[in-house]
Each structure stands twice: as C-alpha cells, then as structure tokens.
Amino acid sequence: MRLPFLALSLSLPFQLSVAKILYAGINESGGEFGVFAPGQVGFGLPGRFGVDYAFINKTTVDIFVDQEKINFFRVTFLMERMCPLSFGLGARFNETYFSEFQDAVNHITITKGAYALLDPHNYMRYNDPSQQPFTGSVIGDTTDPTAATTQQFQDFWHEIARRFVNNPKVVFGINNEPHDMPTDLVLKNNQAAINGIRAAGARQLILAPGNGFTGGHSWTQTTGAGNNAPSSDFLNKMVDPAHNLAIDVHEYLDEDFSGQHDECTQPAPANLAALTTWLQQNKLKAVISEFGGGNNANCFQFIDDLLTYLEANDVYIGWAIWAAGPLWGTSSPCCGPDTGSLEPGDINDRGMPNAFSTVWPNAVRPHIPKSEPL
Image (cartoon, rainbow, N blue to C red; front, side, top):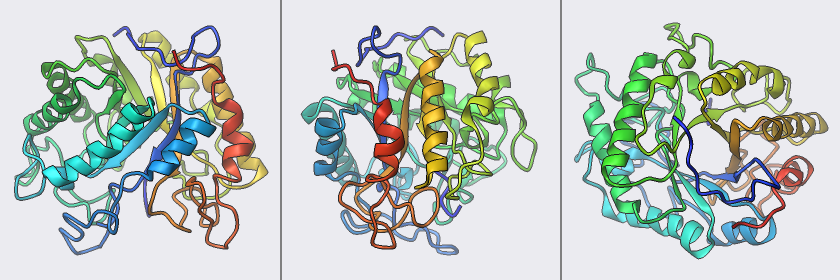
C-alpha cells in the first residue's frame, strides 16, 4: 500500500473441484507503523511493541478464520526493525522484534491452521523508512554507497526461510511494491531472494513482485519517472528450483490506482487483461495481495467484478484485501478517509461502521470459497 500516498507445485488449501482460488484473505497491517516522520531518519526505530507497532489482534484472526472462513493473512513487517541499522540488512536480527512477529505468524498458521504471507513492507528499499514509499536506498543500487547489497538481501531471506523452513503454512513475499528502480534490478533482487530461500531448504510458495508498485494494470508498460522497463520484460526470467513461485500483484480500483480515493473508476477486468495474457503465455500464476475499494455501491461492484474476474481466470490463485490491523483505530488504510479499516469491532472517523461492516459483507464475503480446507 502506498501511504500518503516455472510450473507451480502447491499444497492446495481448497478443493479444486469447488474453487480455483486457493488463498483468500486479508492484509494485517501494523508491523510497519510508527516510523513516518519526514526529515527524521531513524524515527520510531526500533519502536515499542503495542504502541508504535503491532502485528495482529489474535481475536481478529480468530473471527476471520472461524466466522468468515478465510485462510490467508498477509502480515507486514519492517526490515529496519528486523535488521536494525546498526546491524545492517542480513542474517542478524533483532530477536525481540522477530519473536513478536513469529508469535503472530504462529497464531495464524499453527493455532488457526491458515496461511501467513510474510511481507517486508519496504518498497525494495532499506535504511530510511521515514517517508515511505520514497525514502531509503534501493537494495542493490551499486551507485549508492549507503545501499544494502543484493547479497545482503539474499542473506536476509536465507535467514527468514531458515527460521520458518518447517512451517508449511508460511508463504514468502519477497518485498512490498518495488518502484522507480531498474526493472532488471528487481529481477536480480527477486532471484537472490529465491536463491536464499531455497538454499535454506524451504520449499514453500514464494511471491515475487514487479516494478511500478507491482501494479497489474501497468505490468506490460514502462513505469516511474525514469520510464523503467515493463515488469513483463524481466519477471519471466526468474528460476525457482522448487517450482513453487507466483507473481505478487497489487491492483487498486480508484482513478490513479493508489487506493487513496473513495470512488472506484478503474475496471479490473480490462486493466488486468494484458497481465493475464502474459501469465498464460509464460505459464505463471499470480496472487492479488493488495486491492481495495470505498464504502459505496460503485466500489462494491468494482470489487465484485475484480474477484469474479480472478475466479474466471485460473492463472490467479489467491487474493488479500487491504487492510485490517490492530492500530488503525478510526483511521482508514484505504479508499478515502471515511471508509475505515477492516478490523472487526472498530468504527470509522465519523463514528460509523467501518469497512468490515460495509465493504466486506457487500463485496468480499460472497467470494470466499465455500469448501473446507483439505
């Protein structure tokens, strides 16, 4: 989310005879909170658990699994907290932060039996999250002496994978929304992450992002101020020895695809058509791990159209809407200031029902696969 703004071998959570969507769920946003402070590099680091940042409310996960019957949670975290700046990006972690994150992942995966997509919410940047998504050095940028190297990124992912190697319910998301960087460097970093994960012995599903905030609508187009090459030119060159790799895609429905507006004007079926063709041609699958819409009938229809389109095209294997989370309160993570979050029990900024009571039942709940997990 932009604030202020290779055959696939899967462990199938839903019976294929009933649904083609294997992963259906929600983003849990909060592990990346508490660092936005323009001009104050290092603000909020490492931060206070439960005050500056938090990963999930366990009762929320219980509601979504037990009552709503979803099976997929994208859990955000911040690389500068996992790997403090004094350590640098790599295999040495802040063990307190990791244990808090692991506790959230274990509740989702072990206690509730759902899938957890691990999401370093860093825009393929490291060292300054104070004005995300635009601050921080691009990982692997050899012209920037302060940038973490691609090898460091590989070491980071090797360590994450080593720690979760025996948890089959974990999915590895390489990084949130790379943008404004050479697309061949996105490929290079993605491949390094894949190499690190597989070298650790982990064989779980990996989701690899593209450039241009990994937008599905722009997958075959140049993106960014530098007219960076389309993701479609490079992302078919990844090699996964475990053959368990899919493309990570974000697709908002408002006028500029940012998810900041309450009206939906961008039709997903038309905007995803070129990506769908590319996936088919390259025998790849994709997960839409972020999308959203405002609290209005127009957006309910656009979300319904998006999810119906995914169900009709078997190159798409899952989705997660943005966003629930323990610290949103009356704020709105998506789609206008009055929509509110998807956190059960919260209200919006006007003291009215939030998106869990409006967007979710009207547009999302009808698309949750009805079959029981295997």
